[in-house]
Length: 87
Image (cartoon, rainbow, N blue to C red; front, side, top):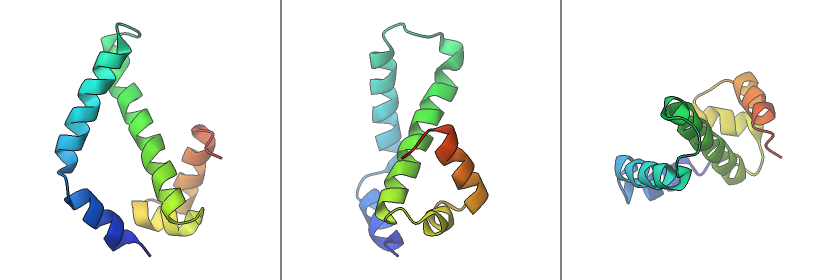
């Protein structure tokens, strides 16, 4: 699997600095839309969806390999795929 390559790419830049940069951009782009009380769930849902899509793509759509890579059960991944309407 491409776990090592993906992990290596992430290690080239600190994950926390990437998240910080994206969080700032997310806040800026919200432009007052939505309340501050739901920012946490909005950001986490968007991040989780992107992560799932990226891993599924890296695993060529193989749900079992993707779930293993993410460290979640296959059932949980399928639930999230349906929840986020990932094609």
